[in-house]
Length: 260
View 1 (cartoon, rainbow, N blue to C red):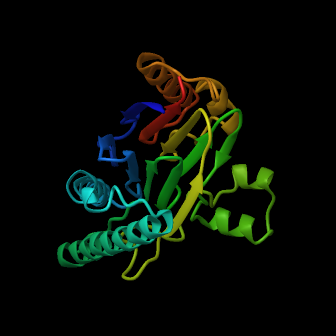
View 2 (cartoon, rainbow, N blue to C red):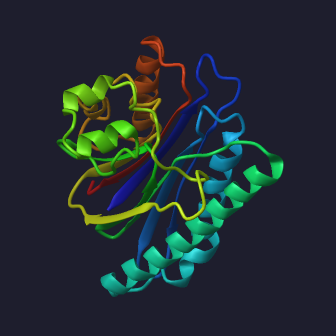
């Protein structure tokens, strides 16, 4: 399959610093092409959260570019998934301990979401904590990650409806994130995809005002886009958010897979 990668970020109109951090890249091993994307959104209520988000992205980027080759060609799918699970959680715990210790030593508060995806062959693998979302986009849009927010928790318990969740005042209040405390636990997901597919990772500023159907429409569903058109579509969504009053940092990473 062919692929196109896009990474766009916008500081926002009322932010002095961009607390979002992101990366997307690919590499070729002997048997596989692997694509990796990550977005970390620093917690806005904490003054120095750009430190946490930058640490998360730099550590996972270094892992992908320098360490992933060790098992990138593992042909047993179950074995590969188990190795990835172990490596990702070990790395996440190291990063989380660093952020928690840094905050304690410097007597500051900081935290970040962390959502990353690895695409290899016809499978995808996700590590996720916080409310940065990962979507799978074909002729429909499917949210692959839960929101670790009070609203997301209440929704999962059936205490509020999906419509109520859209305007719930607690929808940006995180229940867990990178750096919140020692021994915080991220979630791991895996799945298979077929045919033309886009994977979108986006901070809450990217989807804070536009709804899922607008995102699906702007990114042209399962229609493959050339690099300039994919970048243009992502920027279009950012402009819509900004024009409708979104002031937060806005970041999106797209991994597009196509058979063309």
